[in-house]
Length: 110
Ligand SMILES: [Zn+2]
Image (cartoon, rainbow, N blue to C red):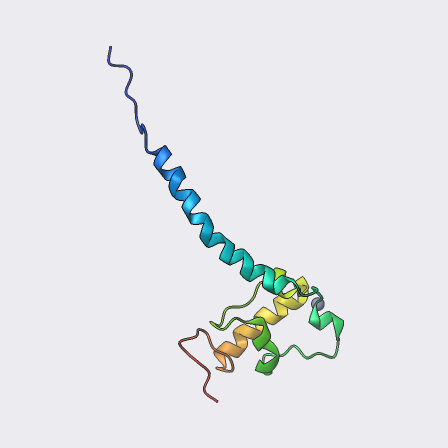
């Protein structure tokens, strides 16, 4: 008799409408990516073997971090896997040495 109990009925129709509204925000993110990826993607360190990749040279590492101190992903910078990994290590070391900032709320003091 009482075998049928409908669980979780309804509610889906409303969610789909909310999804359509959020699409406007996504355009901003892709615009941000397109702006950076318009450059031709060549690994800077491979292109110039003499280009130093060193944790003691914050000037070289700064182009690879955002204003908030985050490391920019390889798909944006165009680095090769080896140099991106070395750059990551260099950035992390430079942070510990206070050569570059961890976040925007801890600016480097020169
Ligand atoms: Zn490279």
